[in-house]
Image 1 (cartoon, rainbow, N blue to C red):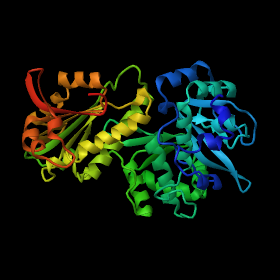
Image 2 (tube, rainbow, N blue to C red):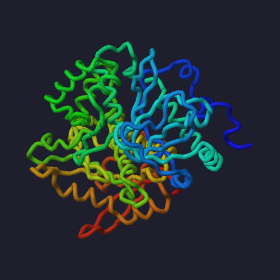
Image 3 (cartoon, rainbow, N blue to C red):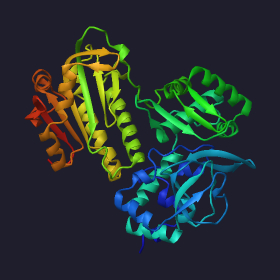
Image 4 (cartoon, rainbow, N blue to C red):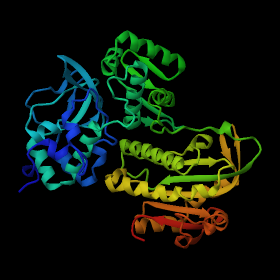
Length: 466
């Protein structure tokens, strides 16, 4: 029996990952949808992508063209490759925007798998390029690649799930806060990062469409947009909104929820360092094969935003204050300088164990092109700022530990999620005497030459086959 015939409806097939309650979601018709954490396309592995692309037709939907319409019986599945589309539904006899779709998102899978009419109207807001797949071919791909079913389950659950912060509650009446949270979540899940690590998003939307989305009067939305422009939070043209300061939107969201909003990478803050060099903990990361041809620009965007999110979460959970650290983006990795008053042990226990666990969980669900294999180095030493950034021999030493040939070879051989190298000083003074989640005996001493330096460190691998 094939995969699809074992399930009668899309609710059974894709509404939630196994073990998640479905009843609450079935009973509610939501005014807004969350963007899924990762796009459909970036949740697939290379074989699944190839299978879908092989049976698809690439089609252009010009701005204003409908990809599908609510209650129509068409059953094609579309995967957006570029451009933006708005999703709208009928509420009280009025069409309301409930969500946005962009590169990597899937459209039309519900109707295809349930044989029901389209549940929403999807219209291109600028020119959209999409892979279009017939219902029969899509079902055949699912027969051959059943893991895609679990991807669809998770996508649907994330779109419809309850929001822990309550930002989508309709009774939440502050237009500014509602609009800020809608934009902030969309930026976190579909935005990108500037060279300084700041979060950004450009959405081709008019003020009228923003007002429709936020369920507000256009003149009220216009007033807040003008205010945000003056504060440097957004920039706008007639049909384009660009988020310039996502951290400011996050602050507005946090004011209403009273909870910690989803973390945003803070960018470089070299002004936080005193002019006199002090001994800082230096934490450097590098994503293995970040520029590999198997990744496209969208893959790299997903990898970067996932890395930043995980780092912020494990720093905060380890009581290493993210806001008091200095951060520099390295394109394929990060540099974080931690103030002297924060114990170096906190960057090992529990941080390394938490980082390994989060990488393992992410990689278990990620396609190969967005998998994160991470090298991390930890050193302690003097750091000084200058107009160009940070400098100091200890920074150079930390960066060169990441380049140790033995570390690279071990990561290749084991496919470990995490390869961590501590300097000899950190191992002798911190790790060797640590308890808790640290296993000093699991570290292996390495000695390698990088450029003119001879590097001695202690290596620890997590995940993979050692």
